Amino acid sequence: MREREAGGMRKMMTWLRNRLHRRHLVYLVTIAASVLFLWLGNAYATEGMYIFDGLDNSEVVTAKVTQIWARDARPLQVGGQILETVTVYFEAEITGGPRKGKTVGAEQINDPFSPVAFREVERGDRVTLVHYQRTEDDLVWIWQEYLRLRPLAALGGLFVLLLLAFSGKQGFHTIVSLIFTCAAIFAVFVPLILSGHNIYASTLAVCSYVTVMTLALISGCNYKSLSAAVGCLGGMLACGVIVLVMGNMLGLTGMLDEESAFLLYINPDNPLDLKAIIFSGILIGALGATMDVAMSMASALCELHELSPELGFRALVRSGFNIGRDMISTMSNTLILAYIGGSLSISLLLIVYANSITELLNREMIVVEILQALAGSIGLLLAAPLTAVFASFILTRKQKKGFEG
Image (cartoon, rainbow, N blue to C red; front, side):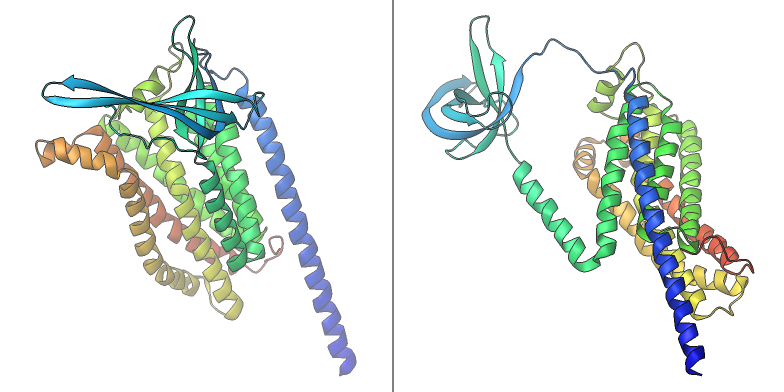
């Protein structure tokens, strides 16, 4: 009896060791594949990338204000009002770049016609300065902005610490996946757009990479990850088809605001497809929530199957649908609220200046926001049942080897 128990324990330890080895192997392969994807993708995407080469040769540096010299307030009469143009003269020490350590004189100009009056600089403030040639013989450093990176870095550090404290190893995997996701967006996807490549294909490629990479790093190569990937990509494809069809039906042009016009004229020889930019924004915006729903569904069904392996395909699918109802309701609400919050300022302006509800709801900017919320939510709704059906199918198959990890 003891020999049998010892043999069973050895088998269990061998199985666990093999599983851990395979998990580590999958993790390392995913890291290596991601680095290769980013390196080759960036090299391919940046080849022929359009970068505006204008006439602005100004230099921007970071600096710390060391002394306030003077404050000059010049009155200006406009109609019946007396306005002031305030110029603050100060000394600052450059803290970055080839001029680091050099002390320069600078000016901060508060124009009364600016929409917002900036706070006047004080000693100890960290700012950005621009080396600006006011006239042919007058070269001066001008205050540009307050330096806000340190508070943001501190907040980012707090986020990382909380994630590690509450999630441990999984939190570390999440941070790694976030780094690769941001790198894929800014080192591959954005250069692909600026290089004139097909935006639709680039969006699908990057979304697929982010999905597979994230699930592999967080969960490994197993039934759960496979089911979540299939459900997530299926939901995203459905979302993309809806955006394409509705974009044509709604007659969208992609010209939503001033930023859209700037994008259109970045490269006059090869202008960007603004409708494709809308497509990309909607899919990337919905990807995170869709992946969350798919992974939650797959995880729940895998755990249910682990506890009750006698459950058949129909029973698992029925349980998945029951699990998904509450999940989808709250996640759809989250997605729509995120879109409303992101466009709140524009919505307020349009509501104030709209003559009627009909006019407001027919403006392309509002139409795109509504399309984004509805298409993303539909993709989310479809991801849950797709994941439930696929997970139930592969979990109830007799041959279950090849995905355990």
